[in-house]
Length: 81
Image (tube, rainbow, N blue to C red; front, top):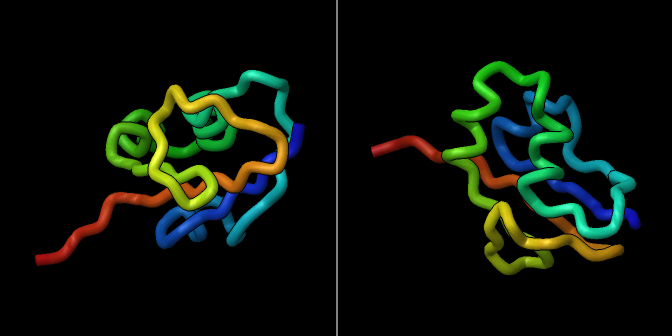
């Protein structure tokens, strides 16, 4: 199956792209996708704990199972005050 991954804010800088299509095995979860794409990033685990995910414009958790054609968005933590 193929899903579209869209990166927001800091993820665009870290991944050096706005989006990409990723081929996955059936049954892959959002968390597995995130780990697969970000394992080589510094502070990978901290990023996972503070990132919000959306699948097809609905908020999703790391256990959400992906389907062919889904759009997954990585929404990083925001700062400000």
